[in-house]
Length: 245
Image 1: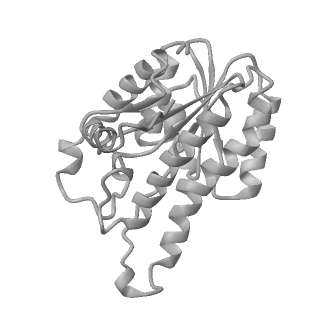
Image 2: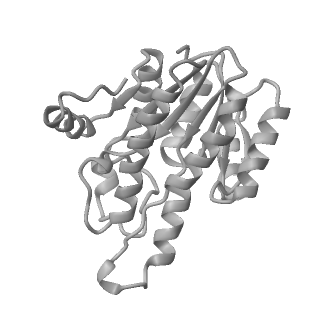
């Protein structure tokens, strides 16, 4: 796909990969709308990148998801690429019984339910356009889970599976379906429990954004970044009969 002259909607676009990708896409000549839950972070993003359009929206809310679609329908230029990027990462300990269920519910709502619902809402709209795409941001942890973040890893594994099925269902439409599989990227994700020094060793968000935009330009429909590529390669070695296109 062309990585200039498009109009992108990026969920969770005020920080981390979302923010860096927004900056990269603006640099490449695209129109970019970002949404997020925190108005202060959206304002900071707008200050750094004046070309951005921002909207406060909690994608875990059914009403907010429908409002996003209506906003997009009214916009000019009209959004033709949906990037399901919003995500949270929390510690969930099943030995504690019900204690962490609220956190688990929140992770599932933002990391998995929101991409499912947003995709279902946007697909009829996107299918009206001559060129359109959905980009799902999953994680290397969907292939090699960490036990202390079981729900986060499970949502990313589910998002990978969802993307495979969506890509197959969209094969006869104008909508291309991409999956980006990042490694650990320097960001605020899981900030409350990230060990000291993780961000220093992680892939910079700006590097990830450049790699993502390049992959989109190559029509690389399933793209693993950095160390995450090793995890995907192991999956391919185990299941060589799988056709992910």
